[in-house]
Image 1 (spheres, helix red, strand yellow):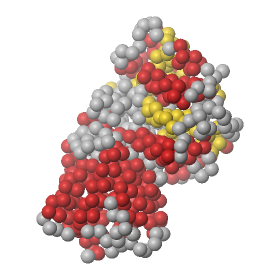
Image 2: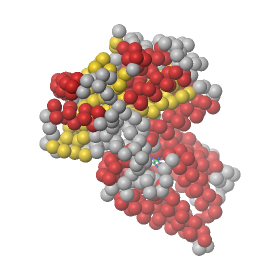
Image 3: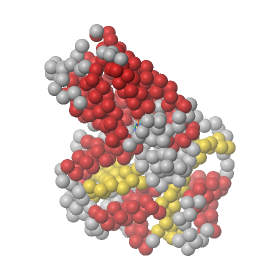
Image 4: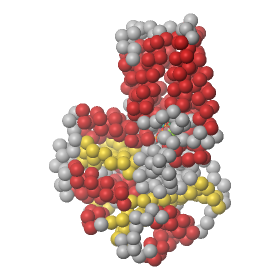
Length: 331
Length: 208
Ligand SMILES: Nc1ncnc2c1ncn2[C@@H]1O[C@H](COP(=O)(O)OP(=O)(O)OP(=O)(O)O)[C@@H](O)[C@H]1O
Ligand SMILES: [Mg+2]
């Protein structure tokens, strides 16, 4: 294991302190907890809380700020945070208008956030939750716990965050988040595994000439592996899988994320994006906005995911609304 | 024989197998089960050591449950945490546990895991060790065995359950994303459950 760390057992603690030290204008840490909240708490709006295992940076603390999240709860690397941490975050950001929990669909995350929601509800705090599940790699959801939440979650933060900023009620913020979830799909692949610091060795091995298709964001193996191909072919493969969902029609406006998993250079993401744009254009889709970069990572895994969100007028307006956070600034 | 020592043995057994459990989880999950469980018991054991020596089983198990919930995370934290809390609920006021109470505790724990995780037997989870263990325990009671003997049978059944998890594919938890590729690997949670039951059995047997 070769990493820029001091002690594998302290990575989350030191990262959180590094975040607040580097971004004091945006972020502050809730004393005694692995919770990052906005430096300037905005009152009188629905509060958004997300979080999950660490190792997906900038998710989720990087999206704490105006127009997106109010708090992010950081679990250990790739492990959901515990209910008491989430509960503290909810109590801290609640302004009386209610709190929306944005949870990625993993059994651990769902159970821990649900326990926190029960604790907060017992205090009389109005809490709602949405569960993101954009990963189309997981096919037969009757035989699994359903699809995983991956990079599409960032668009839920963006759009629900913008909706909350308008002063909308909790039910309406939740509805906007659910609309995003219903219309967003992602598909990923990896070229190399990653190493959880506390584990000290890579999560799987992949021969030089192979790629793993249908990867998640926790170093878990994908749905299958095959011989590595060109960027254009990879783009085609990922987009085909998304389009096979049959929710995108010619003439639709879409938002796109070309997401890096951590170790893939922007150069490669742009090469991929070039082909993705061409394929989508040929399908008659109109790209309203494309984000290219590391939005939802898996430590130092090499690889990418493509995310497609179908927009309507409301989603488009909220997508394009301003956001000011460490990882996403938009005017 | 004290509940504090029993918990210490169980916790230390889990901590000792941290790497083994993590390796199992790396094969079919996200490689954190051993790390999660070890972190949990490392935080729980000092709290247990600090409890009064009144052998209040329910109070000790409640402390384990609360401690695991606030330190393990992942799927295992809420599941095992709920299991210990429910087991505590089934032995309120007791300072000694007979076979019938032990069986009630085991069943309350299983029910808690199912309420929280909505899984059934056969989905490649900890339940595939715990439910057979509970069935074997019940058979032991019917055959007139004492609590420790019943627990011995339960451990054997749990071990068989772990073997069985190699033959099936996961439909709950992170391993479910692998589909058929999870076949051939034993479930980390079923394994950690068996490690805990085994440690408890060894402790009780040696204390007799
Ligand atoms: N719904 C469930 N019911 C019962 N047991 C479950 C369930 N989901 C997972 N498990 C058990 O949990 C074990 C995995 O625990 P672990 O601590 O690795 O959590 P995790 O799934 O990795 O959580 P996270 O996704 O947040 O990291 C599995 O081996 C399985 O036995
Ligand atoms: Mg795991």
